[in-house]
Image (cartoon, rainbow, N blue to C red; front, top):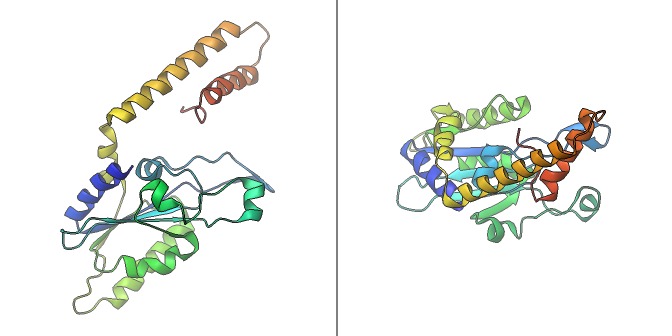
Length: 225
């Protein structure tokens, strides 16, 4: 994931752009029951981090000499909430375990962005997913443009993530190829098993449960399609 961030940062630097990448939103099914969480694929490719309520800010050096800076925004540890919804990584361990330069509380993200994004001519961000988040990003851009004067450059464009990131994801590393082969082997095993155990009178729920069991028992997180 560090290599992925470095490759993307080189592309961002060419356009004098900073990148903001959010994971998927945590969705409530009903009352206090939640849908099973799955991180956004682009966010996972850049971080390998699987918790909700998190974002990555990637800042290439404006002078082209220093290395890019990566800041991961995530939830702080909370003992009471972790008893209910599972353990959190927390800010203290994130830099060492995930290889990011800095970890900050997700609650401070929109307060920090005006300072972090100063003098970047372009901002790479996936809009159209969460309306409230789009509104807050536009407020940050408006604030930066209002502050622009003298040597302070305002953001000129808001660009989509896909042209910068998705072509990079087409080219797989040896480790990624190994993981894809492992996933294919698990899929083959699961499909072979349900075909072997399928009987007249079984319904689709039983077949689905057997497939999901095979995927997850072998270390997968569930079906990919």
